Amino acid sequence: MSIRVMLVDDQMLLRTGFRMVLAAQPDMEVVAEAGDGAEAIENLRSTAVDVVLMDVRMPRLDGVEATRRICAEPNAPKVLILTTFDLDEYAFSGLKAGASGFMLKDVPPAELLSAIRSVHSGDAVVAPSTTRRLLDRFSPMLPSSVNEPQHKELERLTEREREVMMLVAQGLSNGEIAARLVLSEATVKTHVGRILTKLGLRDRVQVVVLAYETGLVRAGGGQAF
Image (cartoon, rainbow, N blue to C red; front, side):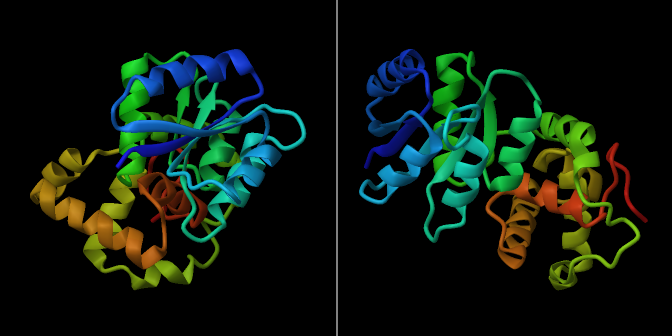
């Protein structure tokens, strides 16, 4: 079955370019387009979509608020933020709103296609190193909760799962976490999956955001205790 994609961007020329790239793929189909966030939300009421390619700077309703509203719905499609500037505040806000990752608009077509497939399969498409730089830069926008009680959700985690969560938040890949904790990558992947389930998160990007919000780690990647 094809991956059903909606393109959301106020520049028709960009949507046309993305549509041509996606149309050449046997496993993808552009099923809807929108020129702003409000139109995107309206389209989703009548069209089944798997992945939304979401611009952030648009008239009427920007991509961040549209992402927040879309991701709040049950069985929501995955959202991939498209941004002009690497690590801008819009990308950060989009991740906090529920997006599964972000990419630059000038990304090579092969990387865009790979990202869409990854998001559709449930993975995040922000590299661990990029996630860390993103959170280090914009963590001042997060609530200052280091000295406050941590979210009760974290109490559901085992000691090992909390270790894994902290390492994910510090920008380590599954392979690096496995080496650090002397575990197999498969075991680390299992732990990450359990963390997502217990905390009700969509992907590892959301794990990172929550770890910073709760003060589990501090800006710069250090532990909060």
